[in-house]
Amino acid sequence: GQGRGKRKMSFFGLGKAVTVDLTYAGGDSQRSATVKSEQGSLDTLALFTSGDTIAGHVHLSPAPGKKVEHLGVKIEVLGQIELYFDRGNAYDFVSLVREVSPPGELQGPLSIPFEFSRVEMPHESYHGINVRTRYLLRVTMQRSYGNTVVQEFKFWVRNTGVAPEINNSIKMEVGIEDCLHIEFEYAKAKYHLKDVVVGKIFFLLVRIKIKHMEVEIRRRESTGSGPNTYNESETIAKYEVMDGAPVRGESIPVRLFLSPYDLTPTYKNVSNRFSVKYYLNLVLVDEEDRRYFKQQEIYLFRDTVQ
Image 1 (cartoon, rainbow, N blue to C red):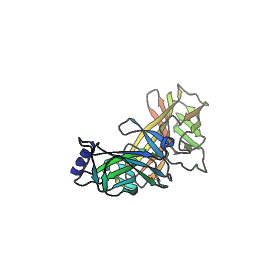
Image 2 (image 1 turned 120 degrees about the vertical axis):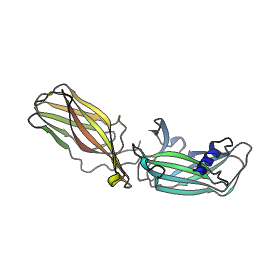
Image 3 (image 1 turned 180 degrees about the vertical axis):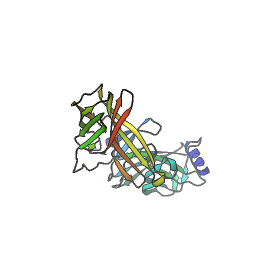
Image 4 (image 1 turned 60 degrees about the horizontal axis):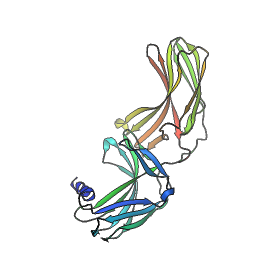
């Protein structure tokens, strides 16, 4: 709207009345995460975990020689889920506010401390295909005549998951009647993000010419609900199991290291808005380039926050 244009102008325009900056209390020891921004560049953001205290200073500087009257300064911690097909309609699952300065006049640079203690941040930051979960600190200096100054500072959240108590192996069969019978077995169905998928593939019957075979990790993001559910799948990792024709009775080992890939934990129904699931997909390609595949869901969890 119009107010927004005005606000941006006072902020980035010729008469930039006030510069707003923010530093965290952790200083050099503040943890950070390097993440891909939606524009594809790499951003380094402060990293927090649910239950952390978020504290620091807001630095306000008026333009040299200017005095700036204001109606008070506040800072907010926001956690938002935004569905891209519903842009501008973010759902705030965390919303905390502190008034850090009463109305007054800014006559020179000013640093104001802030603290939000033990902030519950139940959902991890996530940039998906149709959805994002994001966290930010928003500083607002209220001014009259639509000259309000707003500046946002993004940060990133990762949370440790609970290691599963039961972690059964996966056994699957792929059969094409009288042509092919394969069994494959993985040591477990639940993995942490730096884990190794270890398995074996057994060829019990091979009557078609298999050209090559690979194991993929696929991510499936589901957003919305009911008739408005959108599913997006993408291949995150590919591991070539073999090149060339297997023979009957052969068994082939699989070792797929997860750490090189950009994986998240499995997210189940985050605030009833989205889910992210992972699958191991076995793909066979025969000499006529026909593809056969079988997939199995795996569960991913974060065991440590680096």
